[in-house]
Length: 538
Image (cartoon, rainbow, N blue to C red):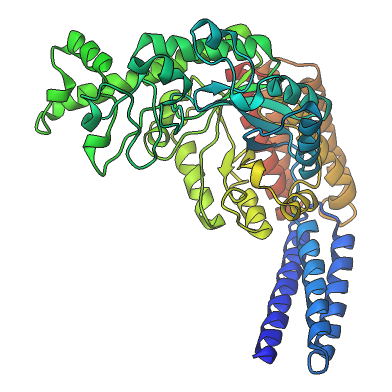
């Protein structure tokens, strides 16, 4: 049995070494700029350690396994060092705070910074509480702050400590979902009539949780509810210099499994619909398809109108604020196109156990959006306690169509995963695409110049005089971005670069792999220009 385990261990190390070797060769041939010398050094160490492990296999099982473990680690580091590392992308993480002092906040953000994150999505409105002392809640007779944080203000601490570390802090809001407290939470304790109810709960005289999840929901058909949540959001952006508002749980729960669990059949919603359409939605039969559609569209319009109103108010208060949505699977995801004009960034919750499932999920969301939105990939390997390798694979999974990654959630981050991110895909520092699109464009163009000097020219992927011509085009484009030229001037410079690149390709004066890389960069630049123009973000 011991011999079989040893053989299996050695085989796994061989596989990891071979995988690292393939990646080094593949990315070298693709002219990816990575520290290959260091990667090869680690790979050579892995080979030596594996040889030593094999030699010890028959005489020293413990020593063999120790050498094999070291060899595996060296091969893993070689793999990470061979990965591409983008210079312009959002690297975000959702986080529910637990810190009780500014010192604890600082320590948490040190770990966030060590992993390479440049954005933190801090749960600020959760279970119906704010994490900060809220004047809005207080004047409504609602508990003014989550009891875990009374006596200090974690939002202020995270914003200020984040700023000193180059981490943009977004206020993540749980929308109309107010938790699992059996009393309904602070809002519904104060205003039980604000509760949303499903069809089967319609005659309840008190708040009732959702079947399955145990969540309580606020009734967004009620103007008082909408005003309260809007006032909370306005209070956050007026009081704190948050980078953005992140919207979650902004639609009623909807299920195809049992229509009686669908929302919202509160007394307020029913009476409001009846005033407009002459029918109590509780009495609509399954055969009345047209009326059922009218009812569904009525609810959907209220949801959409609220997000639209919130977006306008946020931008009125803070024009540079980023409004993002993290659509839940189900109605929020399938209807995300409705919000395209009312959010800046969309973060699909591509929560899957394997990386192969991530990109298709992100793609389905992206094709629903209008031009102008940026898409980040939302993944949950930390929360699901997947290993560092799976985390890295999921971070990379949709990089050809996304502008960044947001990971759920930092509370479950391991030191191993943090180190892997920093050695691998987040090795280089990066400008957030959503926060600073023009600076991100500069970083992308400057990276092309660096690649030209460090990779393409030394390896003869392009002749020097052609590289000079491309660099001149790059310099003109960079200067236009730095001077904040109008969009049509930037588009003109971009077109000149594309035309030159096409001519070099036709004349076979540049390696095809380099053409592919440059085209990918130009596509990203174009997308960022559209985003900056349409969303008025710089």
